Each structure stands twice: as C-alpha cells, then as structure tokens.
Image (cartoon, rainbow, N blue to C red; front, side, top):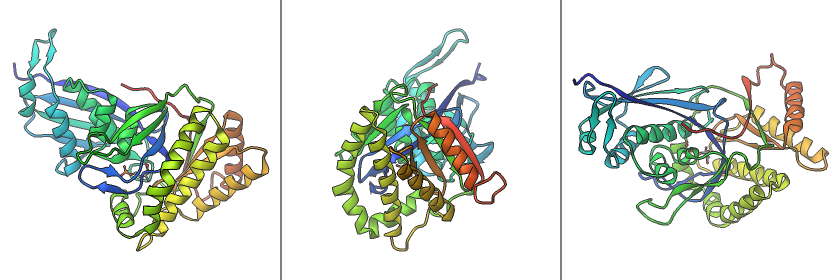
Length: 354
Ligand code: PMV
C-alpha cells in the first residue's frame, strides 16, 4: 500500500551563549568570525518539539510552526533539507512492511510540525532550538549515520546558534578554518552533570518580536563596526580559553566576570554599528545594575547576566540559594503587577535529547 506514514518526534532545548557569536564571515554557509561558548537549557522550560513525517501521499515539503503553516522556500530550510537528504540511508519497518530505499528519499516529501514552548523570535534563541531539532529529527527519520557534531554543522546552516543545541551542558562552536564550513561545528566542553549547581532565571522583559533580526544586525555590524573586528581578533580568542578554564574548574567568579563582560561587549558592538542597534532597553539596564550591585556587595559574585538580540535577561545564579535571593530581589524591583516585566522563567540548566 502507498498509504503509510513514518514519523519521528524530537525535543531540543535552546542554548544561551556566554561568549557570544556576532558576525558572519560567510553568510550563505553561516560561518562565524569567532568561536562561541554556550550553556544548553533544561528542555522543560525552553524547548522546541518537532515531528517530521514522510509519506508517499505527500506532494511537497511543508512545515507548520506553532500550528501555522510557514514557507520552506528560504535558503536556510532548503540547505538543511538538502544536506540531510544527501546523507539519508535505507529505512525498514519490518512490522509494517515498509521499506524506504536510500535513493527514494530524493523523491519523497516531508511534513514538519514544530512547537516552541516559549516566545518565538523575542531574543530567546528560538531559532537555535528550532533548527537543531529539525536537523536531529530529520536525521533520525532518514537514518542518517552522522554524529552530533556532524549534524551540528548542518543545523548551523539553518541558524548559527542552532549548532550548539545538539549537545547538553557546555558547548563550544568552533569557528573552523575551511571555506566550505566542514570544520565549523559544535563540540561538548562538559556535560549537564558537570556543574549542576547553576540555576538559570530568565526575566522576560518583553515577549514581543525583536525589531532587528540577528541576520541583518550582524551584517551591519560586520560592515561598519571596528569594535567587532577588534573583538573577533584580539578579545574573543583569549576569552574562550579563560571561559573553558572557568567551566572546567567550576570557577563561578571567573565565569560570571567573563559572561557579563562578553554580553556587554556584544551590545557595545551593536552600539558601535552604524546605524546603532539597541537590543536592550531601560529595564534590561536596570537588571544589569541590580546584578552588579549585588555581586559587589557580596564576597564573591552570586549571579551572571547575559542578553542576546533582545531585551530579555538571562541570569545564571551560582546555586539554588543565590537563585532564591535573586528572584526575591527581582520581585522587589519588578513586582508581579509592574509593567516592566512580562514574566519569569526559572529552571536548571541541562538537557535531555530525543
Ligand atoms: O543564530 P542566530 O542568527 O539566531 O544568532 C544568535 C546571536 C546571539 O544570540 C546574539 C549570540 C549567540 O551566540 O547566540
């Protein structure tokens, strides 16, 4: 019969960079101007769930995001689909008598349904979880034999930061040297159990969509910011080594200092772009002041903050006690009925796959 459907569902958490990726040296392949390091979040709080299905009754590739059909015609989807299809292998479901041959995959179409359990494109790296999940789910469906790092290089071509969501724990995206991008992929630095004291609190300053997409923002920064050139060549390479060391030693003081400095430098690059890009707002700035003041009033730093291409604060507390105190402080400055914050998301870091 030609009426069968084969489906795979995968769940992938988002990741938050503590050493930022900002700027591409190749826009089509999505190759960055510097290495970056991230922490993968707990899938219970910020994740994408994607179901991919194949059937001879499907006449074209189609995709739904949060229940609404979206176009797959963009180069990024096409690149991911093509890369996975070229690596597809035979698939056999003996019980149901279904056999898909390697060469059939180029003729078969897929349907993709993806859900985010958090605001899409509000600077919470929704595309990171999305493309990582897409690459992983399609890879499973088509019985692709590549490992997570090789899959990460495919997810990268959907959204740069997506390559880091193929692993849990702490992850480095190695920028690579090759022009074809074959060595621009993610590697795991430490798994989710390595530093499980950390607690992540996200203050959702605004769940609205951001105004400047990361793609156009990066392009403008690469074209106009001298600070970006200096950062990529002189600052980030050293910071990456220091951050790796801080993670290895669970050295929260260094971790916090580096993460905050790198977030602030990324937003400085945005200001140094012409015309300047403002991702943070007054509430973001107030949260930075609250965290800085608190860290300075204690013997050792209690919290790290980092902001992506939007106003939302990702706060990383050194342990559960610090997280409780942090939330108390935030609630004091931003009471539940205040207009300045939309919501809080509180969770551990770490990850599960499949
Ligand atoms: O992968 P993109 O295009 O969504 O870019 C993400 C850029 C930042 O989130 C600002 C930094 C990062 O390293 O994730």
